[in-house]
Image 1 (cartoon, rainbow, N blue to C red):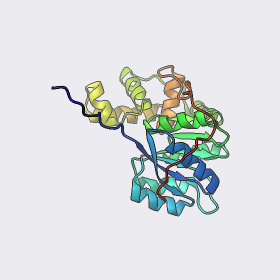
Image 2: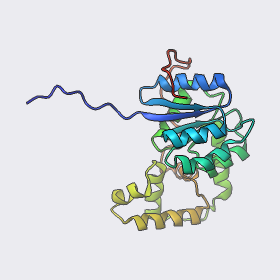
Image 3: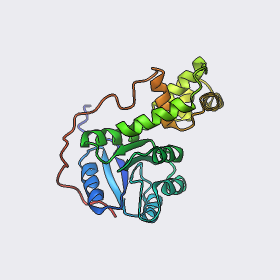
Image 4: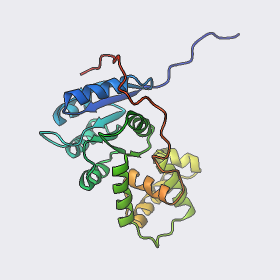
Length: 241
């Protein structure tokens, strides 16, 4: 018998916006709520408030400013590991300094976009990070590439298995997801991850992804920009605060 039932709705990514400037915070909420695959579950103007909301709402994605009158993005990333350890973080900062980008990578951020970015770029960054990938704006991408170049020993040779694990890590898969994909044990995947880090000196997923792109194993993380209107959208839904 033919069913007229509608398919279940696609999963919507839950987003927490952390930004001390109210106007920017509200405009980000307008953008996020205009996207059918995202919803804003909270907005915070301080690191303290953000940590509380992250623990309460367990967001999938956090859009994070980096500098605050009290506290910093780096401090929040430490708290987020306890409050919402599975949240993916996109830093949205006025300045992409080497120190800030390095701190963000060390803290586990998956993306870094400058506030001068167009809406198309910010939308692509949100979707990339929500999917477990990485995204860097032009300035931060140059910094990450420089960090990879500095740390990388050009004489390093990766095994076939290490390259396979590297590609899948760069695609956003966890060790538990990689093991059945390669038909190996979780222990084997973890051993290859340890070996990758030891050989390359790279530890964050973002740096490993950039390295995979430099080796030509994957496209560059920012190679394709999705079409998107550059004007701020209108008609936001009310967001939980």
